[in-house]
Amino acid sequence: MRCISSEHIARKYNFFAPWYDFWTGFLDVLGVGRLRRQMLKNVYGRVLEIGIGTGRNFRYYPPVFITGIDYSREMIALAKLKAQKQGMNIALRRMNAERLHFKKDEFDIVVDTLGLCTYPNPVKALKEMRRVVKKNGLILLLEHGISHWKIVQRLQKKMEKKHYGQLGCSLLRNHEELVKKAGLRIVKCERKLFGIFYLIEARK
Ligand SMILES: C[S@@+](CC[C@H](N)C(=O)[O-])C[C@H]1O[C@@H](n2cnc3c(N)ncnc32)[C@H](O)[C@@H]1O
Image (cartoon, rainbow, N blue to C red; front, side, top):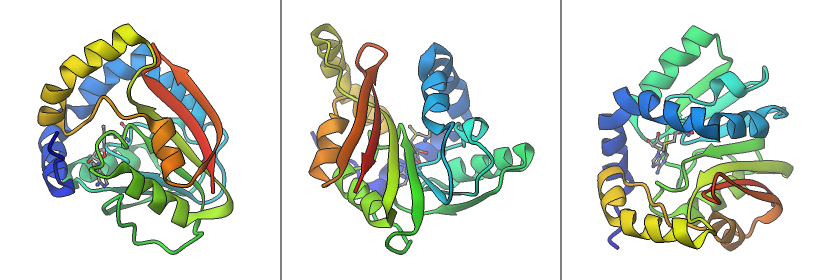
């Protein structure tokens, strides 16, 4: 299937931004919110969140300084408003996940939730995460991808073309494999919610 460029995907998210919290709110109620909380409750030090969107994770962070990036201007604008309302200690910048403007070994923790499904080259983005995280740092991922349940896989394969065309979001990525391809070491990988959600902790 033809891959959509980062610029095109960012334009799609500019368009969806006003409705994003409404639709993702359902997913969070169905269990994704609980997974966000589980993943973020112990983060520490300098944290970078990639593809931060409208800031759906803000409420789950302990009081640490966060740097957040996203390629969509409108998503970042909404994240800024939310950060102000919630009094977050945060710096938000527009940036491409596949070309991070940060130095090597800058962050203790790199977080990405529901982002790898949209980056045109997820392995490139993961390699960038690997570059900017410290040697003993941690990469925390909560991603949706191909299920290991055959019946769910069949449905995902049927929906892929339309879903990717509309949202620039692939349903078929295997994040465990992508993380390994990027040269990262998986410390922990759990599959949740019919095997669709991947909760991964990885190190350099
Ligand atoms: C499905 S949303 C996830 C948002 C948020 N992380 C969450 O958990 O709700 C995907 C986000 O990735 C952003 N994005 C897509 N491609 C990107 C890229 N190449 N670089 C940075 N952000 C990107 C989109 O603008 C969007 O905000």
